[in-house]
Image 1 (cartoon, one colour):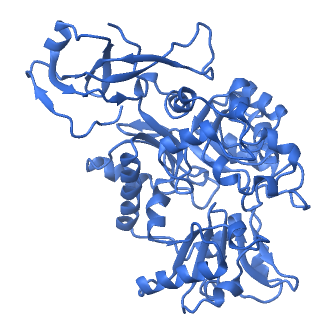
Image 2 (image 1 turned 120 degrees about the horizontal axis):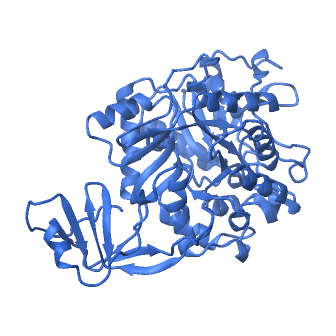
Image 3 (image 1 turned 60 degrees about the vertical axis):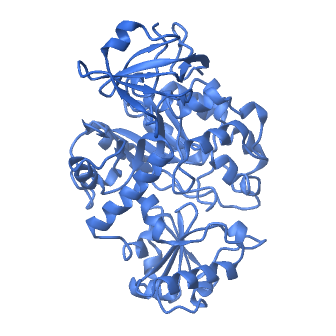
Length: 514
C-alpha cells in the first residue's frame, strides 16, 4: 500500500503501534480456487472499508463499522476520506540508474528528422559548454526518415560542435558516434579495421568500402561507451536517487531493478535512511562470474531490510527496433535474423554458474530464436527456480508450452505493445504477429506474467502500463489479448510478488476478516 498524502491523522493513544485506516475503499481480490495455479487470473471481490497495520504489516481488514476492540487497540487513526486503496504496486523490470543518468542526456525522443536531431544536439551543447562529451538517447530510425535510414558518423560529423558525440537509440541496444568519438576511443576509421571484429554478440556496421559508419550494435557499444562511464560515486548516487524519487511519485512501493555495479551505492543509501521503497537488485551476471575480469564478488543471495538480491541478469539477444532481436525466420524483406549474444554452450554454462552460486536468472530474450535458446539451456539445469524470461515479445505455441513446463516467469512490458506497434508489422513476418506480445495466450498457457516498464525506455508509471495492457494498439490490438483492469493490476501486484518469492502480504490487501 502506498502512502496517502495530506490526510488528517488523529492520535488516540500510545498503548500500541497499530494504525487504523478507516472510511476507505480497500481493494479486495477473489481467493484463488482450491488447487488453482499461481498464474490463474484473480478478479475484483469488492471493497473493504478499513484495515489496520502493525509496523510494516497489514494485520486486519474489515467491512462496515470498525469494531470497538480494533479501534481501542489503534494508537493512530487515519481517515481515508473515501479514497481507493490498492495493493502495493511493483515494477518487475526497471533501470533506476539509467533513469537518473538520461536526465542529463540530449533528449532525442520524438525526433522527426535528421535536422531535428542535429538541432537538439546543438542546443544541448550550448546549454552545457563544459561537457566533454555530448551524449543523447531516444532516436528511432523509423521516425527520422521515411526509408528508416540509420543516422551515421557522417550525419554527426556535420553537426557544428567540436566534441565527441555518442547517441543511443531508444532501445539502448544501438549507438551512433561521430569521428571524434572514435578518435578519443582510439579507434581508427580505415577500411576493415581490426577493432570492428569485436565478437561477443557485438556488430560494427561497415559501409560498402569496409569503413565504419558510426553505428555500433549490442556489445560493440562498449568500444566507445567505456569512455563516457561515470566514475564518481557521488554522481552515480544522485542518478539512483532521481530514479527512486520518480518511482515514488508514481506510487510504486518496490522495484526490481537492473543496475550494474550499483549494489554498494544502494547499501549506502539504506544505511543513511535514504531508501524510500523496496529494491530488488539484479546484478549483471559478470558481477558474480569468477571467470570474468569484471567479477566484483557481490556474495551470495541475501535480503537485508529493504534490499534483496536473489537473481542475476543475462542477455540472449538485442531489440526488435534495432533489428537485433534473434528470430527463427528472417526479418521481413531481409536475410537478417538478428543477433544471439551467446552460443548455446555458453548460455548453459552461465546459467549453471548462477545456479551453483545460489542465484536465480533473469534473461533478456525478445525474439523467438533467443527464447528457444534460453529455454533449451534452462532445461539442462536441474532444479532451476522460477527463472525469468524478460520481454519475451515474440514467441510461438511450442515456446509457451515449454515455458509453462519449466515454470518460467514472463517478465513483460505492456507499454512495448504501443511503442513497437509503429514498426512491428514492418519488421516481423505476418506469421509471427499472432504470437507477438501475446500476454493473454501466456496466461491461458499457465505462465505467470509480471509487469514492468523497462524505464527509462518507457515511463515507470504503472498505471500507463496497465492501460496499455488493457487497450493495446494496432496492429497488435487483438481484443482477445486485451486484459481487464483486475488482471492488468495483478501483473504489477500479486504476480510481481510471486516472482520475488514474497509472501502475498507484501502487496495484497487480504480479504476482509470482519
